[in-house]
Image 1 (cartoon, each protein chain N blue to C red):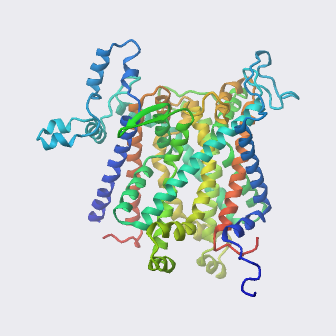
Image 2: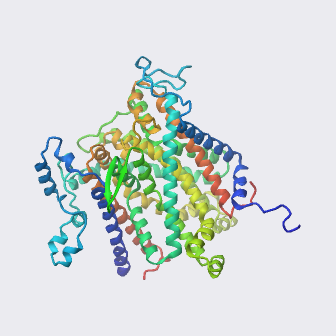
Image 3: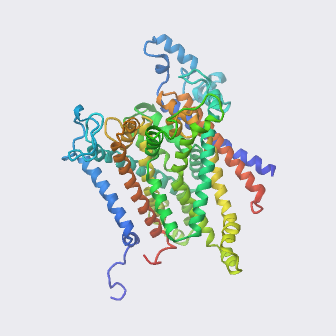
Length: 305
Length: 328
């Protein structure tokens, strides 16, 4: 009765979550991030999504008004609808690339760190090599090569189209930093007593990695995820400018790129709308990411809220 | 020292081989067949085959071990992988598909304009970042510090491209404070006029993240024991900051700075493109726009070599300067 009065004690992640929510700035940021995700999901379902496609040349470049709160673009399309629709590209790029990068980084880092030997040598060589190529050139080369490509490798046919090349370019290049971190941490944990105990009990290598070590290094993946999310949203803008990004659907990158000619004519609203959309989500992700890092840092835990 | 130097260089070999394998994989295995594009729409099949033969793309991709076993060494060596590695390591990147100029020549002429943009932006930016970070550490937790922290997060959140477009259209275009774009044929004083705005935008873009980084570095240093000792001895705040904290914070600062230096050669993709500065960044964007893969291939390898060279140099300098680094 005394031992287990309140049922199970609070799990680590639940208490961490509460720790984060308790900070007002972090809570507001989280709300804004969830709002963006909800908008992206809404656009994805396609249910009563604002119409961005109807062209009306008589209405070209109209400044913000009651009918068009963010004005209209060169084809007379509603900029607010384009901004809302652009959330889908931004969120799907950032989410897919982050998931891909975190999965590869976490997987390879754990394998290299735990198993060591030639596997470790190989993985270390791979990430040292990728790390030696300046990041911007690396993404650019990947995105350039992967755009609308059909190729066969070792007898398998691959086909990559449209925005998928951006997902792949960002995901396949973004895992390196995390992999290095996870490998280092895994090596530290490998010979700790709880791992040795699990091994003595006869747990297999993969079980130890998945059940014992993964929970202890997972916070690094969470932090990388939130920081990566921001940089992928910004990367999408640059790739769009280079003509390697989204085509035929509105994206914030394409909107900013369009503005390079509009602005000289005083048409500022399209740039302002896309910039604001990126600004708020990246600000909130920064604030939230900092809060997550503070809350997950064991040295800071318990020191007030 | 010599043994250390040699070992350090030997360590670079697998990395360089790895980079050339990545470029081979990207541009020769996954990338599209460039012959269709080079030959043009009206080329006959024979012309294409001839071009393919000239460029060496008719060879098999991978070496065939069967030939080696059969004692046919030239047949084994005739493949695209080996010729790619050979041309990469001898820096023979061939000609740009678009301009028919050799790529080495293009890189040589592009490095100057790139450096003329990035070096001033880097030095001015670094000076401002460290000064503001020092002031923040000096007034830690006060209004100034808190304002700067908030503003720097705001700065990071603005998309770089939007900043450049805004700067060019308003500061140069509508308000006429700077020339809209251009770069003089001959290097001389007018360069300053054309570079002023791109440098300003480059500095502005890097300010937020720089201040955030250096503020953390300097604040970490102010928590060290020697700072408390110095204060206890009655050393003035100014001397503690400049004489003690800054001196020790220089180690992480220098490390950070050296890592950035090789990227200065690359220039800035976006700034060079918008302000028509004929540097390497411009060349890269242009190559992407016109699908000029040999240029992208060459810049990937050359920039990695420059980066690795700078890292090597840093390690050697540390080994020379820091007595704690042992040379075995």
